[in-house]
Image 1 (spheres, helix red, strand yellow):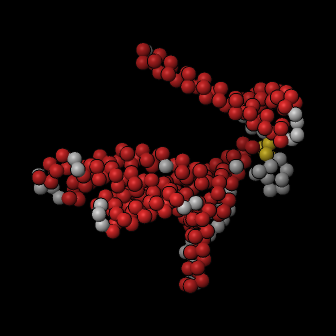
Image 2 (cartoon, helix red, strand yellow):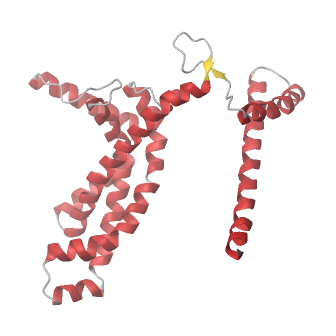
Image 3 (cartoon, one colour):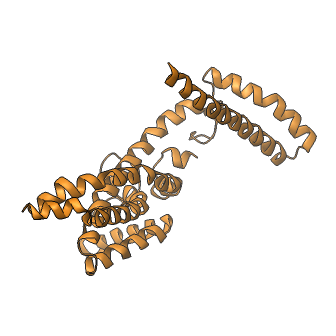
Length: 259
C-alpha cells in the first residue's frame, strides 16, 4: 500500500505537468494559426480561448476534426481514419529499420571490438562516422542512383527505388532509416564488448580452458546485451527524425508523409 501511494505521488505530478504542457501547446498552436490568418493579438487570444476548450471536448469524444492531407480530391476528410490508414505503414517501416540496424550494427561492433587495432576497427569507425554524418536525403539519392546504375549495367533491378509495398519496396527506405541507428548500435556494441573483454571473469574463463567462441557467447555477449538493447530503443528517435523525409522521397504514404 505504501509503495502504491509513493508511486502515485511520483506519477501524478508528472501527469499534471504533461497535461498542462499539452494544453499550452494546443493554445499556442491556435494563437499562431490565428496570427497566420492575419488576426490581431486581441482577436487571436479571444479565438484561442474559445477554440481550445472545444478542441478538448471533441477530443474526448474521439473527434479529431477534418484534414485535407489524406484526401486525393483535396476535400476535407476525417483525421482519425486517415491516421489509422497511415500509421501501420510507418510502424512496419520503423520495425524493419530497427531490424536492419541490429542485423548490421551488432556484427559491425563485434568486428571493431575483435580487431581493435586492425583494419576491421578502422572500417567500423569509418562506417559509423558516415552513418551519423550523412543526411537522409543524400543517402536516399546515393542508394537510388546506385540501384539505377546497377540496372543500366546488368539489366536487373535489385530493388524498387520508390513506391509503397509490403515486399522489396521496404528495403531501401528501411536501410536509410537504419543508417544512424546502425552507427549508434555499432559504437555502443564495440565499446561494451571491449570493456567486458578486460574483466576478471573473462580471464578466469580462459584459465579454465573454455574456447573463445564459448566465452564470447556465454559471458561476453550476454553481459553486453543490456547496453546494446538499451541503445536499440534509444536509436529509434534517429529513425523518427528522418521518417518524413524518407517517406516523401520514396512515396511511402505513411504517418511521416502525412505530417
